[in-house]
Image (cartoon, rainbow, N blue to C red):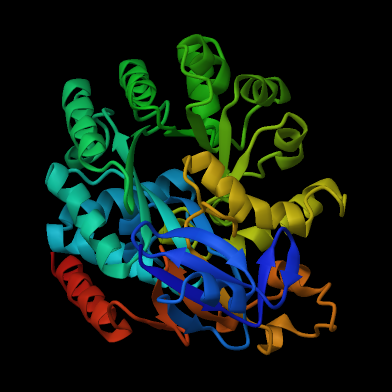
Length: 445
C-alpha cells in the first residue's frame, strides 16, 4: 500500500479548524486512510511520501452537481435574453457546429476553470451526441487530462424539435447509456442516466432512464420545473403539475435527483421528501436566466437533500461552487426576509457533503474512508481576513467573502491538480489556445 502524508497549518473537519493533524492517503485507492498527528502517521507509515501544504487550511473539495461543459464555449452568447431565445440563439445555434475536438476543448476548459475555483468533482449533464458515444468519451478524456472526478449524467433526449445531435430514440439511448455505465465502474468516472426533462424526453424515455438507474443502483438526473412554461405545458397535456405527473409514472423515489425545481408546490416538495428524492439547485443560473427562485426552505422542511450546481457557463457566466454557496444563502435571505433560513453551515454542506450524498459517492468530507479530494485555502488572502486566533470567522468568510485568489492548492484522489493557483496536469496557455481555435471554427461556420 502506497501512502502519502499531507499536512498543513490546519484541517477543516466537522466545521472546526483542527491544528496539529495530518492526513494519510492511500494513493492506490485515493481514499483517506487515517487522520492523526503527523508524527504518529510518520511512525505508523515509515515509508510514506510526505507533502507539506505549509500555511494553508485544507477543506473538502467542492462538488459541482450540475454542469453542461460544452456551454463554457458559449459564455456571453445571447446573454440577457428570455429563456427560449437564449436557448435557440446559443445552444441550438452553435452546438451542432461543434466537432469532436470542440466537445473535448469545451470540457477541458470547463473542468480546469472550475477546478481552479475549488471544484474536485463535477456532474456533467451531457447531451451532444452527434458523434455517438465518442462524444461522451471526449468529455471523459478531458476530465482525465484535467484530473477532476467526473460523473457523466448521460442525457436521454428524444424531442425532435431539438438539434438532431441531441436526439436518440429510446432503444439507442438505453443501449449507449448502459454500455458506458458498464464500462465505467469505480475509479474517477461514474455514468448515470439523465432523461432531459418533461419537455425534451418522452414519458417512455423518462421511464427507461429510471429503469436503468434501478438496474445499476445509481441516481438519475432530470430537469424539472425550471421554467413556468414547463408547468403550464404539463398541466395542459397531462392535467397535473410536473412532479405529480412524474410520480404518476412511478419514477419518484431515492434514485431521482431533480435539477432546479423552481416551480414546485409545497405538496410536490413534500412528496419528494417522503419518497427520498433529491434536489440539485443552481441559484446563479436561475437568476441569470430569470427562471425564478426555488423555495429552498420548503425543501429543507421536508428533508430533501440539496446539492449545488453551477449549470452551464453560458447560463450563469461563472462556474464556481463556492460562489453558489454564497448565492444560495443570500438569495434565500432576500426572498424570505429571514436571515436564518439558509446559514453558512447549510450552504457549505450543500456544496460539499450533500453533493456526495446526491451523487452517491464518498466525497465532500474529510474523514476516514472518504476520497482524498481537498482544497488548500490561504487565510492570508485579503478575502479570508480578518481571522481571530480561534478562527470563528473562517467558515463565514469562506462562504461570504472568499475570492478565488485564496484558493492556492487542489488535490483530487490524493493527487495535486492545482498549485499556487496554476494547473498541474496541463497549462492555462494550452487550454486557451484550444479555446481560441474552437472559437475561430465556430465564427467561420
